[in-house]
Image (cartoon, rainbow, N blue to C red; front, side, top):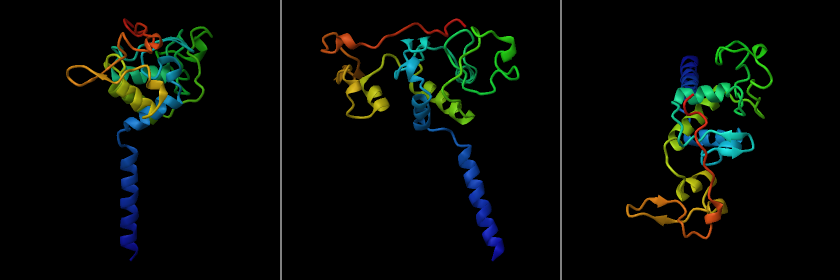
Length: 191
């Protein structure tokens, strides 16, 4: 009787450890994007531009790979407003070969409101690549996917379709034309 119970316990532990290594879901990445306040600088759409933290990169137009995006989240960007979300980023030279003692206050990336676990960094980087990078101008459907159905935040986008039936952004005749979302060049381009 003890042997079958041990096998069940072993199977349970194995399944739980396998699920811990599973790919993060888009919902996890979206949750981290919101909770880590990526929205404060990059905006909900990832377009960046002027924000609370300065001129953030346009994630919709970034040329960075998944690994480079993860590295940027983990290490921040020296001499910019991009925070480092790894608490040990500058303790041992893992980020850009630099240690905190080697950096001035002006070049040290800021600390975030809260640090992220490696799984959270992975989830938000994958969310950026799968839901923001290369997606063109933001649409009504993307806005609703971010904020939820029925939100007034998406009123700046009309529910119009082009000839293929795809959602289009606000038209020139929109009553909300004055509320267009800012866009800025990709701060990461050429680096």
